[in-house]
Length: 205
Image (cartoon, rainbow, N blue to C red; front, side):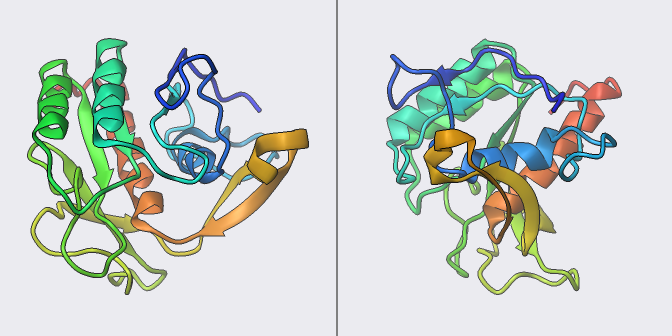
């Protein structure tokens, strides 16, 4: 209700605003900065943070490495202090690593999901300079689906995470409270914690 956003960018269709047409992004954003203590919906961990919506995946959840890299660079160049990447690929990429290095050089903290393969960590979760996040369950154990091993820096809740999001691809004002599983849900918990540290004056990634 009172969460604020700054201008963002749509790298799927640059003629349109970066509106969510899938639901995943809004769910993730809510974990970071959902308005809190207002009798509406649920809570965001860094509820005073401003969101910068940067769309790099289509309504079907697909995108390109170059598009993700461009989104990282754009966010860093437009003042993002924390960049959350609830996405991933099994393949490493020079273009992706260079974008991460650029963001770090601009002072941004980069946080990314480890992946849901149950095996090795994907990218950018395993990329150098990124905080890779695996998922835990209600018993604080590693979620069965969570990627693990080299590249994981920390774990956070990623099972049955309840958050407000869109439905019907955002048409007709459709909203639900969705309970989602995934390291995509764990990563924004860590990004929000990083935002809280930034708010306290910590500036070094």
